[in-house]
Image (cartoon, rainbow, N blue to C red; front, side):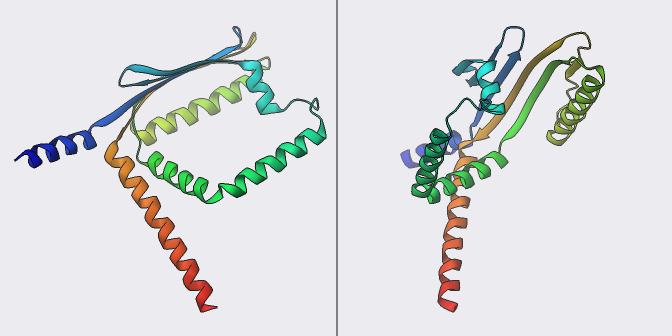
Length: 196
């Protein structure tokens, strides 16, 4: 009887949905971006990032870095990728499989975009509205969002809120699927090598 109770509790825990809330804000007036992650309404991660650091990572450092240092960094990255290539590939397959099983419960987006050019503002805001509505339709969410242009100033304000859920059973299923696909690939390769 005790085994039955333990099995029922275990099945309940496995099918319990893990709810994650993600809030992301970026504002060029303050020069900061904030990311907050909540698990079951409990904050587990919060970080404030300076937008200048993000710009440097995206657009590069404009030639301030020594070319020899860049070559050394590339060699170190190549060595680390060679050492952990198979394991990283397996982890990326697991992450993709888990990502496919994530359910989007709710999301909302508010953005104010101003590039200093009215035509660019209109095109950018229109494209973002279309992309956001298509994402909402894909996930079955009725949210209009609030994406507006700012024609008089150069500004970027971004406020995203989303609720995502995933079960432990989904994670187990995704990892087992990635493991089986890895085993099948390795068997096929061995067979192909023998056949040649």
